[in-house]
Length: 449
Image (cartoon, rainbow, N blue to C red; front, side, top):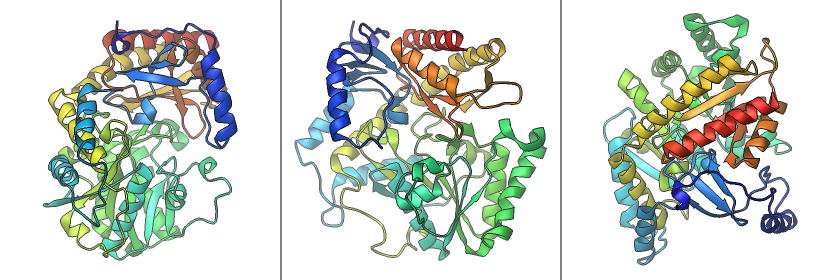
């Protein structure tokens, strides 16, 4: 049986002897600030599975934190990369134009769920670069200096995106931070104040957003409101549709651009190619969309898409970069787009979600430590608590992650309080692998709670 079809199997104590040697070398040569809590050294990967240097097989439910939606070592991607690399690796678009950038930008623009007529695409390298450039584009287009972001947000680790990111553990000792970034409260419905629900909860969070105009920046100085359709690091918290509709209205009334960060939600994860498709279908598409992670199957690539009328207002020379839109990465991205549309990867996400959400909600009834189950498509989170008062249970999450790893399932925590386990498994996972992972996960909950 190939690794692509295999099931989790750990044959050694973790880390295994070969992995232990590599991890010791890592400790010597890599900064400790780049953390890793998994005693795993990957040797190869196929589909949703990886094998470590000691021959242990792991089912990966982290996927490079949302990078591997199409899975490891897709043969068609390998062929596309090989074909392009035989022509040339790179050509800077400020110097000479190359077709892979143009072809990908054209293909992406056709499916991008944003407002406006003619669209234009700027490519970059990482999610943080995409988000930072989206802010620059919004400022350039509006002539305004300020932006509004949210509690629970994660947008990157550059100076600006660290400022945009809510959790300051990602910015310890990195100040002073850029000015002009103001924060409103994100609609975390499970923890809404006073037990608010439904329309009352949405109204509260919309009022909190509007209050920023009074307490921090008048609306006329705000260039953009930036948010994730499902907060990633914040705890896999979906933005309620009615709240997004209200944000769109606030933006339209005040000449503000709505920027949606789809770095993690993009490329079929949400049950659509992009979560913003849900917004467009409901009549309130964003002005600017950023994307990265699964765009090129693991090669560094990211981008920003907006109407040409917005892009035309950006001052020349303020956006771009040496490696932006690397030719090999673009070739891979074109093939990712083709495969995901041909093989209905959004449908795969919905199928996975149906199986997992049923099981997760059964666990919620069975285990008192599970406070909430939520998500959109196959971007799902389980929040663990200590009691009926919803006290976060990060300690239990840490135990579950380690227990699952020992059995061959890789899980990752998230959330403001570190008490959420996220699901970002490659969407090519087999039914048998998914069932095996769910069994390992439940056993870890049962054993440790």
